[in-house]
Image 1 (cartoon, rainbow, N blue to C red):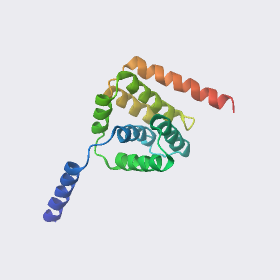
Image 2: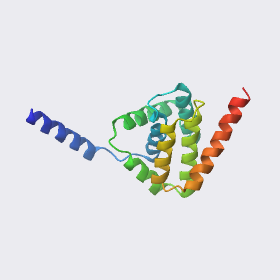
Image 3: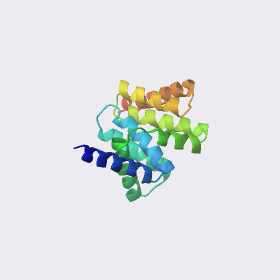
Image 4: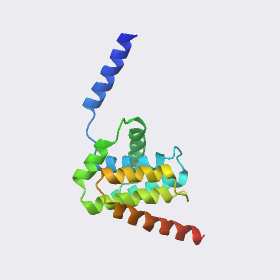
Length: 155
């Protein structure tokens, strides 16, 4: 049993050391996936909103977009932590791009018509890790909340 445990540890260590660093597209998609997975439900409206956000942001064709979404979902399910994604986005994106990413997170949180406390907590934490100010965190939340209310009010 000890040998199998050691083998498992070696396999996990080898996998994490040989894994290629993520691309900015994957890091962005993974952080957005973190938001839609925060409430432990994958709502179809949130998945569609994720697809729309990534398509608008990255301009990928349908096949590449589907592959990126699948990879991002697998990464968020298996990753021990997501600091490598946060670090890449923080290092590669300017402040305005990081604020826009937080706005996208809020858009996903409101996509199913309700704001879940777990999603808000996840966005708050990611916003802090991305070094986005609290005022921009609140401003983007209010912006997306008003947009979501406007969409549901006109239906």
